[in-house]
Image (spheres, rainbow, N blue to C red):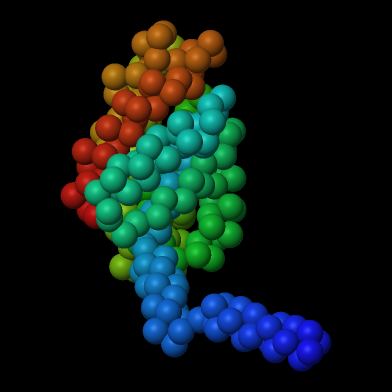
Amino acid sequence: MLRPIFVSFLFLMVLIAACTNQTSPKNEEKQAEAKSNETASVATKKNILFFGTSLTAGYGLDPTEAYPALIQQKIDSLKLPYKVINGGLSGETSAAGKSRIDWLLKQPVSIFVLELGANDGLRGIAIEETTANLQAIIDKVKEKYPDAKLVMEGMQLPPNMGEKYATDFKAMFKKLANKNKMVYVDFLLEGVGGVPKLNQNDGIHPTAEGHQILAKNVWVVLENEL
C-alpha cells in the first residue's frame, strides 16, 4: 500500500513544481516588451565624438574624471539621448589625427567635437600645415556625416612660443570655426591654463578639479546643440 501512495505523492510534487516554474504568457510578454524597450533606447542614442589630444583623453587621471566623461554625466542627469565617445589620444598631432579619424568615423556621429592642434603648437609646426590638417579632418566628418553638428575647441599658446606665432595660432581655430560654420569654444583651458593648483606637476595637464572646469567651458556651448 505504501508504494502506490508514495508514487502518487511524488507525481503530485513534480506537477506542482512544474506549475510553479512555468512562466505565464503575460509575464513572457512583459519581459519581451521590457527588453525591446531597452534595446530601442540604446539604439536611439546619438553619438558625440570628442576627438583630440591628452587633454580630451584625461592624461594622468581615471577616464571617468576626464571632461568628456563629466559631460556624459551631465547628459545622463538630464536624460538626454546622447552617448559620449572619448576619442582623445595623448601626444596626438593634427597630422596623426588626420590619419586616425577614418577609423573613428566607422561609427555614426551626430556631434563632432574637435580638440587638436595643441601639440602642433608646442612643436612649432607651421600654422599653415596645422590648418590644412584640421580642415582635412573636418572635411572627412562632413563627407561621412553631412548632418553632424560640429564644435571647435580653441586653444592658446604661452608667449614663449613667440608673439606672432602665438597670435596666429589662436586665430587659426576661430577662422576654421567660421569657415566651417562650427560652434566655437573660445579657449578650452579658460580658468585652468597657468593655474598651478588646477594642473598636474607637469604644469600642462589639468587635475580632476581642472577637468570639471573644462567640462563647464564646453557645456556652455554644447548644451544648445543637444
